[in-house]
Length: 299
Image (cartoon, rainbow, N blue to C red; front, side, top):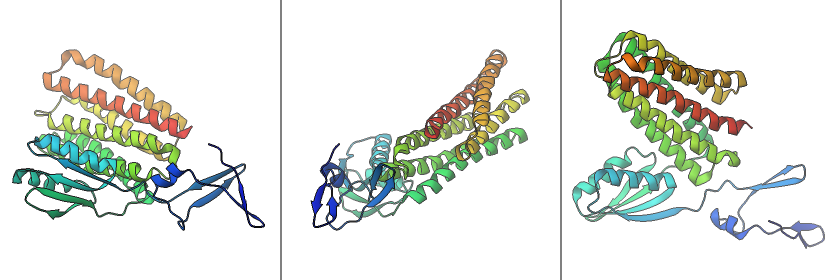
């Protein structure tokens, strides 16, 4: 995109902003923007969010699961105000319950056939970094606490750990919403962070399913393998915040080693242990996939 420089007055040079960019961020005359010199480049940026979004959906006769997906999607998309139309009181109850897991969303108005949902939060990029780190730690401690339960053979406590995935999902949705509304402070890496968050949600899902479906525990020979998974998860967390190519290579080696070990145990396990082993292998592959996205960010 090229622009001509216009001279105004004796010494002032001006250039016009692209109309589409100004409209996207609701920029008007008198608003402030940031200018940053970078050798030949002059970087123009704004602290404003993308234009506020409003939407309306009619959930009448929908299933509870479809309502959940739809409300979550408009939240992640960045909508600040949503009118939800319904017929049955139970449908309103579903929406009210779902907003409890969406940070900032509140029902501010209700009639007999619609709810008005509004974002009452004020999110920013600094908060995103903090929430993203918290999300990493939620998943990591979900893994560590599961290992502790397996070592103690505390299956009751192990099965209760699956519910922590709700907290993981809540912060995943919040991070994705911030990225859709503002982008990342390093804007070129917005999509990479978006992908990392989505994979972290999948990782939480796999830990949750592994714990929820373990009824009788697993033989002691499988515990060191899960311990290796947890160590791989911890290594990746450390790598994300302190890049080290040697640690990156170690994680890939761990993934390959876990893949080889799971192949060996497939033949002599119960059906429950077979599922447990499958989940472990999938977790290892997910961690490696997230790391590949991170390596792109490091380039």
